[in-house]
Image (cartoon, rainbow, N blue to C red):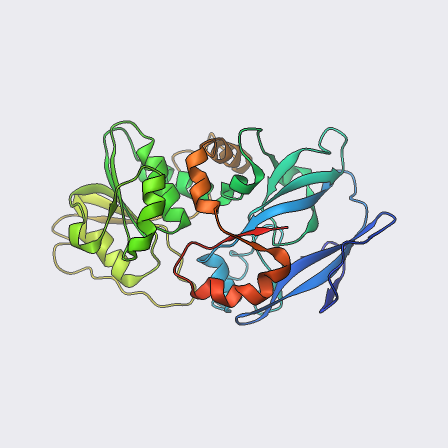
Length: 341
């Protein structure tokens, strides 16, 4: 929902003016399927318990956010799929996004000047409750910090799967989430990890993270855990085929309103396989009693202390150019660029 102290003005000219305590901010809105525009918002001085942030970077999700951009969120999921600081509705117009980093410019003295990660849509200046901030450590630059939401998803998936020492693990789908899931698996002692994708150009990202890349012709079999993150029926079938006896497929893809088929014939039952849903909105049952959402996010951010992850945020697009660049970004087979402010 909108901050009661702000208002949206469609098609306004870009501005970074400050009018006394009022800041004129710009945000990205999806206004109809496949179409986005920049709008302005007037932000008053943040009240106690909130801060104002000057964005440095934000990240685009080609999975969930693309479904939002094209109006493919089922109406039954409109409430559950709201981003924490979303404005508008999935029926359009909607301001959506959940991975931004920036510098705190107003609020409590102890926070001003610190860098933080926030689950906020794409916006050059924005306000958020202090309770939703995750202060970035010096070891995690703001550019890499936009991976926090994705690596938190990967961390939760491993908690759902129960990945442990010496496991044989395959990840299907070398997008950002899949690559981070494989990266975390690789950090567990004794694991055998590989990542599968039909696009050979993704191999360079896997190589940068120290994860073996495989194609459909050389998929390792007998994996105790297979994480599926390709959001395709063919990928899900490949994940099932690669499971060991009594192995598990951890389904990380979200398909929105798109139908998906799955082949449960063949040896699915005789091999006693399991398909497990993993979704970041809830903490995995194995950790729910001990870990709160803020704790999980801080643990995820701590895992970003690795220069190799910079390979996943190497490309960028300027915020001013984002509405015009989005059609190309949605159609590209490469990893999405991050947004620079």
